[in-house]
Length: 420
Image (cartoon, rainbow, N blue to C red; front, side, top):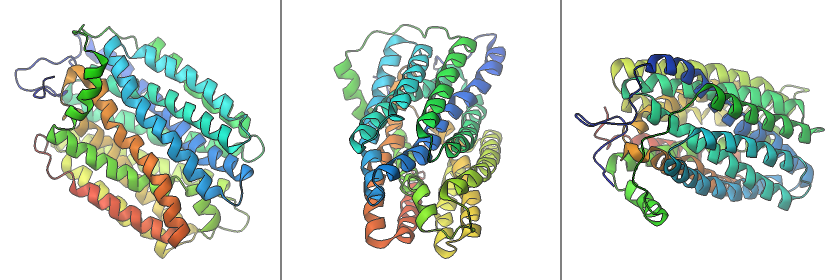
């Protein structure tokens, strides 16, 4: 496998990402669908994962809810870590993305419906593992669409459009989920799955794809061996480490937000944890949306990626101190605003940076699947680490641990040489 070409294209190299002569028209349809597709993804991850799932576990095991959520989330994240690169490999081999987006979306509807009927921790674990598997098949193909179809000079815009879907999906998912907590969790899961299924059908109907150019089939054994080879490319490896650390610090805190609001933050009288999430979700969405759009646009205009990524990580780390100093409603609102700004800018620009350090454009989905281990891998580690930290030293220690991890992520951007 060549390690000299990137998805951004080296001088004089041909890449499969350049649009056809009618590319502008195709991009005009593709970009909003990337937003919608990513919104559906985060609708599940935030609505189901951070509202419905904690509420469901609390109903089953009120006394051991923190440890139980850590266990369920950690085991399910193993499936996310495995299925994302696997789906990337198979979608690369098929030279298609749309069938995987459609299949993953429809399968997610079925698995979320199953999760809504689970009444024991074992069944919840199994069902949530299946949700992670199907959603990561959907995500792997969706992520590869940008390097497949968007030219390098437009990837900041495309990444911003992808990033815009994060706050939209998050706020809709949280608002939808909180409406069904705690009495109608099954209905909440069912509607969440329906949104993903409909989005997948719309994407594949409206964004027609041309089959990618045929390549010589590579045995699966060599494909899997290439995962390790991919990380030998220095710039890609450092981008992987930076994403991993940012996500580890982020997930360690955000995974337990429902319980933090219940047990740590002094909420106004009469406000429940679910009600607080319903208020905080739009606040987070607005700040994330603004930072995503501005960060993507500025990074394209200035031709710089690394400074935006590093500053976003530093801001995210500093923000972790706010709920420690102000464990009240004002503090959590301020934390939400600042964290949204930091995370929105990071995701918009880091996504663009990553597509420019891919080892080989022909294996974009596989290489992005490897990178997505940096999204899913922290979800394996974070629940176990966070539950131990909370059990030993409380939620303040969890915030401080998250800050240190994210600061390490900021440092990992510096060694990247091929991107400014």
